[in-house]
Image 1: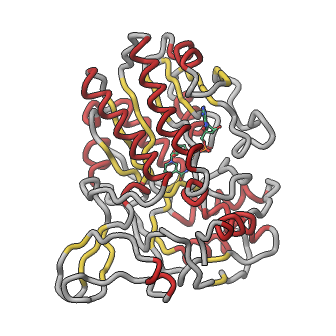
Image 2 (image 1 turned 45 degrees about the vertical axis):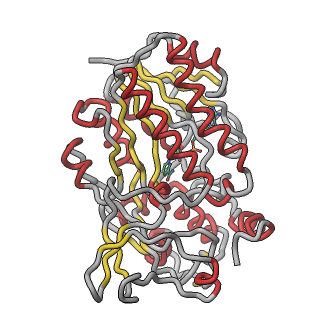
Length: 373
Ligand SMILES: NC(=O)c1ccc[n+]([C@@H]2O[C@H](COP(=O)([O-])OP(=O)(O)OC[C@H]3O[C@@H](n4cnc5c(N)ncnc54)[C@H](O)[C@@H]3O)[C@@H](O)[C@H]2O)c1
């Protein structure tokens, strides 16, 4: 049955793809988005479907929110300021948009006595901090804290077992791993997630928090150098430069195609099994950052080896990738896009974009605040 769906932040990368998926499935889509200049340098993005109802406004504006909630069955709350590094020196903006923005959205729902059939909130793998590990020597499982500045400065990238000093080997990270908050962005994402879940439990609204891992795909904001390492690498290569890889490049992440993210969101909307749950959404296939750079070079037809800088960013984690068995079990989710396929699509799209390379601007800003070395 067709539903009226609201996506906050729906003009962005993830929201606009979800909007297309919802329209294709026969739903009606309304978007509340303030068209943040860092993301939408040229104003209204031309990829946005004409079939969506776009209301330009801030999620922190209660009157606007009350207006957009009218007649809505399902809410996807995606509006956020996105970027781990930047959040460390734009503290008040990140907490205001993400934490306060979510509080305002929920307050407006309550004041308007509005009860959606379902609320889905975009959470993030960043709230885990380091992923899960097991010791390769003594077999003990570990959830270590992030590496100290002293360790990073001495180039000790890998983590060691506290019990026997053996090398810790990464494992897929499950939802029950306690979060280890390590950036303002992560704190604000956990706030968004927890505020929505608390609200849902207390007011009887089915809420699902989807913890997205590293999403890549067309429409990634190239004007925003703080997000999307895949797009940052590709933009550099399209500008004739090699991608700059922190540490030794062997750090593992979970890069998931935007198409699989849309799939998971549509399933979460339909499946009552996901009510009240937090669920990882990743590709289920870990990949090193160095390999990401190599696959992208292949996809772009370049023979450009990544530059392994052996530099670090304060607070960066070594490894974290998703255990997606809960998404499989509760949502019936199955990733369909391989890294080769997905990066090829990203490369083709980037070829037609003005891929401005902003990586150095970002590095300079981080360095000004002593957040990289
Ligand atoms: N892209 C990823 O890899 C990733 C990973 C984990 C979680 N997430 C989460 O997914 C969601 C979508 O991310 P994205 O990659 O599409 O980001 P994006 O920056 O492309 O989209 C965010 C959208 O929110 C809008 N927005 C920002 N502040 C707003 C405000 N105050 N009021 C209304 N709209 C506002 C922006 O204009 C933008 O269109 C975010 O909540 C993000 O934290 C993304």
